[in-house]
Amino acid sequence: MVISNCSQASNNENKASTEGAGALQIAKEDKAPQSMQMASNAAATPIGQNNATPEKVILKAMTIVDGDETYRAYDSGLAIQEFMKLGIVNKKPEARVDYYDMYAVHKPYKIMGHDLVEIGEEYMTKYVGCCVNENVTIIVKSNGDDEGILQFAEQNKCKIDENYDIKQDTQYTKANLDTSAKYIQIQCRNARVKK
Image 1: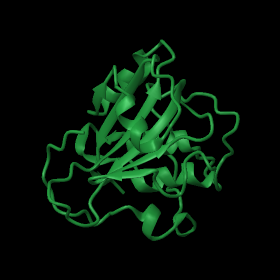
Image 2: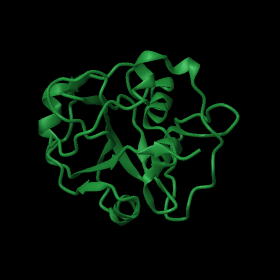
Image 3: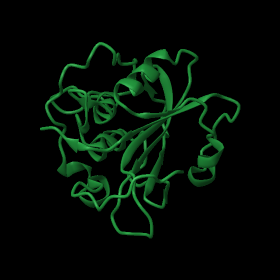
């Protein structure tokens, strides 16, 4: 894991671990841009009155607002809580390495047609001796048609690793993954949420 951007602790630290999922709500859901077409997730139940699925909110947390990298459309900690509510990821991360929480996916779930295998979030709660590069990360197992998800990542100024080495994560998450498959990591720098 490369840490490249020093910053101070965020006012918006991981609410998932400090306040609990019940205390938080999904903000009003906006219509997704055409480039962000959602995959079918039959097991995902609509959440609350906004009919927001975890896929919609995590992609919203990865989406920049008005082409400005300074703002993301949604809070990453709140987005991860939607996965927790459905038991897709555990309420606590499998591992915390430096400033990075790793959540292995425990129920089959698709993001833009790809199998989601891991969600990560980097943030600072206390200084551990280096710099933090606040971001939200997803790792997906490629379905062979990567154009849509890569285009989404590029449009939202996310860092892309098209051949992510999943072996480096399995030592922490104990996930039983197909190490011969192609995995894609998309890492989107956290920024202020535009209200």
